[in-house]
Image (cartoon, rainbow, N blue to C red):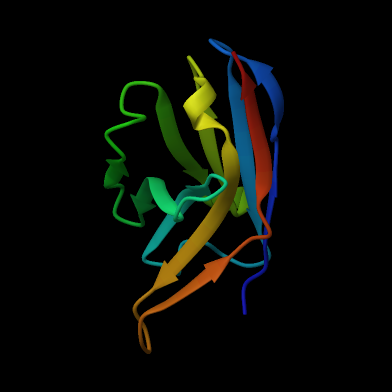
Length: 118
């Protein structure tokens, strides 16, 4: 079972930037997709961005143009570059590894807190 460890969260002023990292304990190329989700207090967890092993990126409408997901297969690491941060981006951000073999399954990191002050 893959272990995912997020880092890079913190407190930032509105308009600032953060780069989140997700280090995996094994090759991420074997997973169909890697992604970042977030959960704000009192809200459901939602997709922020995903990146398939075929290179297809998917972004939530709320972050399009401000966020970029990338991966370094050699380092087994996934990144989330977030720019022009807003107060509504405040949440715990979780790394996700998704596989469809031998059946659909998701693995999660412990999360990293991002707080944007306005």
